[in-house]
Length: 99
Image (cartoon, rainbow, N blue to C red):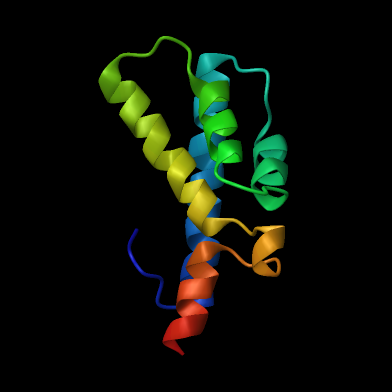
């Protein structure tokens, strides 16, 4: 993960991640929405939720496509808020620690 330099950078990154995830969801005709993914990330209690999210995307893709999906899901995990982190994302926590 590239370290964010500002809150604005984090917000811009979130917009890009949302767009990418919605494109993937649409192209794979998945039965999950972006809002559901965001809710899962927010309410996570441990890393098993990340595995649950990844499993929702697995649709017998080739390795290259699966790697792209995993990268976007990982970015979502790092850039969207988690309740357990006082409603901040890991990226925001990094930014907070740098200031």
